[in-house]
Length: 508
Image 1 (cartoon, rainbow, N blue to C red):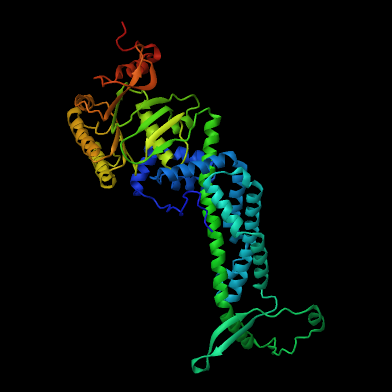
Image 2 (cartoon, rainbow, N blue to C red; image 1 turned 90 degrees about the vertical axis):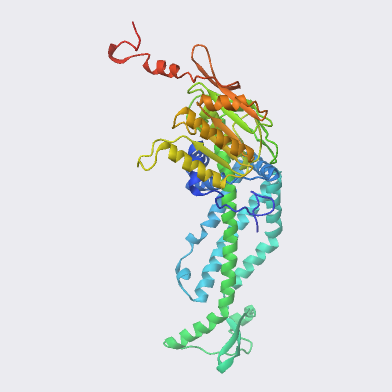
């Protein structure tokens, strides 16, 4: 029994692809925990599922589209999906409903009883799932759900479920234990085998007739005899107990996988509802294979900001076809870092098979997303800021691939402009030449001007817009770098109104 809602052919490995410290940096820089919390809607399991599944970049555009189709089904049938998720949760937690004595005991009969009881409860969950699928099958059209529904219809037929009930009834051993054995070496028992006792007619049950069978009765005070008989029966039951336990584990593992995969999509539904309530546009992006750089978006917004700002967020329209380097300059507090986060988050969400916060989005798939954002001073004073930045970039260089995406925000601005620009130029040149796509936000004019001067058609320069009166539009437009970031505007905004009746700086 396979779920296959995340991949059409196999169950994807959900183990992290990047070292935890690098993934932690990406999460923090892109503010992905805010996205995870919105997906979770106060459900800890959904939070952990989102944190596990979303960063696992899918590099096959067909698989991304496969997930998008499943997501569309979930958005159209969210009530049914929540019911299916509830059944899966109940199936995963079924062991809590069963007394744990059989788990702690080595007695095969006790283990068998407990496993049979677990399967009986799981059979109820299987019937509930089958009922939901039968009732709502016409509402699902994606290949992922059609495959799941077909599997359930084929493997959980009425005949199978009826036979399962009958078999579980027999495994309760209502007529005792019928076994056979052979003599082995040293006249010890060997080849123990459990048999199904013959059915007795109602007349035999009424009259006590056992059809000529013979046996013996162990005295109630004969503890040693009872123990020996229990051990004898256990040898015959042992194999079947192991088989039934494995069957219960298999069914429960199916519900566990169903819970995880539906949990991811349910998280997407929760996030979509939050964004829709806030009036944020969403779309299913168009993924393209690894190859010549492609990137284009309309009204692209930062998801984390949309979830927390409480007011409309400005989007950006960018055309960056065949651009392997995007350099962003311009006014302070003009939306450069916000746009950088929106690009990284959209790339991550697209490659998870999710929607993005834009009216349209198209980009190449990337084998990984890396971030190199400015950090505060090391509180332990172990390293200087430049040493720390270089160490992080060195770690990224160990894992970055020829088809990765690197997002840099004010990198190497902790030293003087000349030295920082030289380091950044060397890093950008090495990354771009190896095939890495780089998006770089910087206030280093020396860096931006030198990159612009080489006039490479694969470079795109964007600048944060500023009106003549100093007001930021939070929009980026293609433009060459300027030698100023208009820090004077921030100074005037902060110091325009001096406290306690004091005159502003320069007044009079």
